[in-house]
Image (tube, rainbow, N blue to C red):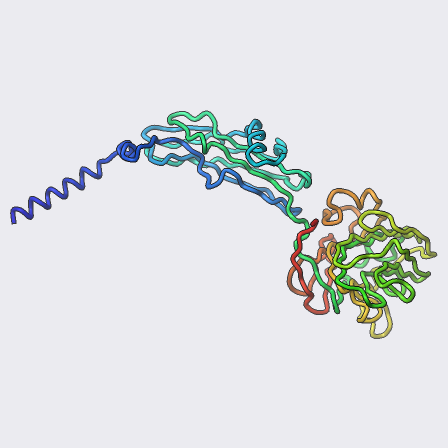
Length: 388
């Protein structure tokens, strides 16, 4: 029994002594010093910027492998000189993020004695949609002015990299289908003496006499083909005659931006921002906002992907379909990213259907007027990455 008591006391004492091991003892055992580093899994974070991107906040802190015996301080700051290091290391040319698009809050951080992690600094990045989509931007943040411990040199930097993401991610297939607005507010599209219709369109196949993009049968219609017109050639059909040209021929399996402007009878057709046809018809104005009907009685209204009869559907996809109450110029159409996105609050934009829902039969109108489209039946949704 005495032997057992002695063993118990000995083990308890050993445990107590082990519990008194210091942080320095542990470092000595593992042969390293307690160096300060930036708490981040990776030194580079890629941030994809899209037209809908909102402000971004990231937190940064510093740490040590083991608890510090006295206070350790440091400061996070943007270091423009690191741009050259990034370009050399990662092999791409970049621009530094403009000063007006970021701020570091609580940049001074502290690891208190007895701890091994500091408080957080906040890196705010905002108004990123103003960046030039053709460029790659980097915000290089460095840990500086460290006091109280040595620094692990390989973990003192953070690179936030901003790249343009796809502007269009989902498109809508209208094969044997059609979409229409039941105008809640038809005022902005009623009796229009000036307007622009535009859309992105992709055709899987032609082979039909007529395929329809959008408009009103017998009044003002953008369609492809006709009797005596190649089945891949755009035609503008109006109540005062039609306009077409061999310069308006499309290929299958290829995205096009098609825009048609109207100015009191003067009509201009653009493909991919280039003027391909101009002409005149004795038509002073067009009432796009006529009340919706299924046309069983022969009346006509505005559709996307349909005109006159169901065999005139569009065998393909659409996206970024818009109506403006003004004539867009070639400069407007060719402005940065215009084919793929515009500001929903743009002056003169009276209907804006992105066709990017990915599910359902309602196509949201992103303009201020709220004239959503309804698709007859669930369309075929397709994931894309535009511009390609």
